[in-house]
Length: 293
Image (cartoon, rainbow, N blue to C red):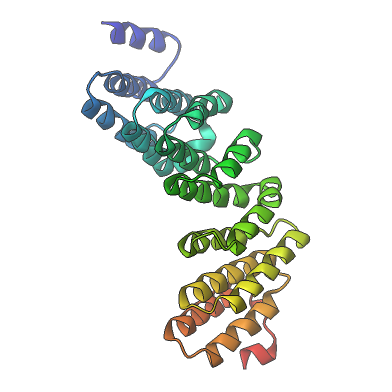
């Protein structure tokens, strides 16, 4: 009955058939979200991307995301994971959220949880929202703090968020660059964590000084850590940084050609070839005749 009266009110307000259908669909999912059964709640959450595809109206998307943020705030970690997946699948609709502050406030409240898994999911959520909240200082601060956590799951989530924010925000990239460098060079940092931290350096292209310090560190890594995995990750990050900042592309071409000619490892040669191909398609004008030969 209530839904019929809502429908007639919306119809009187001049809403078309499609908006009415969208509203009914949202109310249907909302009923699932408020169910006492975990299975029904999850099922409702995972149906949101289809709703956004069918009815991509900002008003609907805004109120749907606010409902999801409420589920994230009060639900358990499994529900939070479901909301995270929906947010990542609906990336292109994020800019249609009108009440960004209210949405982020509900999500952010979970960062103060005592549960490191809840904090980790929240960091991944913030990282997935970096395109709409690039300059949120409280998010920046939480990511920095979590990089020092003793919980591996939380640290990995902070690395994911740091990469996303570095890509979007010059301020964040400048502020985090030294921290990332210290962690990569730190003897206490496990090798597998170093391998996850290194790719963040590809986003240090916002200004010349930042790009230069990232390049120096990568140059050092390539020479100090000769293991295959380390060389591959450092070289590829070096290439992506060069492709974005453009200043040192010729030097990078030289470096890759050197590895292609002199390194006996097949995996390294393969990477050098792929990266040269990438630079040829992105920056063909920076190749000298000598490089092409």
